[in-house]
Image 1 (cartoon, one colour):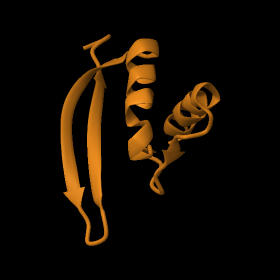
Image 2 (cartoon, helix red, strand yellow; image 1 turned 90 degrees about the horizontal axis):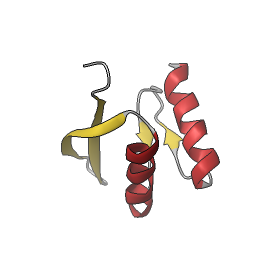
Image 3 (tube, helix red, strand yellow; image 1 turned 60 degrees about the horizontal axis):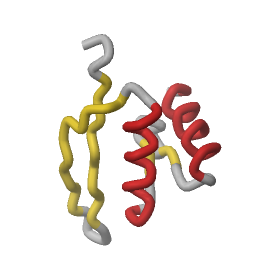
Image 4 (tube, one colour; image 1 turned 135 degrees about the horizontal axis):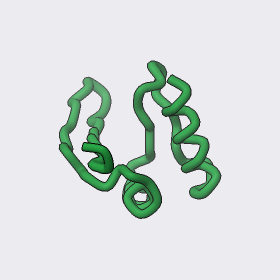
Length: 75
């Protein structure tokens, strides 16, 4: 999925390389202390302006928070 990688690259150019891409290349990985900065950049400068869902996954060694963002532009 080249679109996710390209999106991460675009964010990294603006935010200094803090965004990673998951192994399956379907998700962005953001350090918890940088999430507000990344979400603000996405909301202000992309069509992903709707926070559809926030959930968490409890892994044995960590807790992962998942944000589902959506574009309503062509909805």
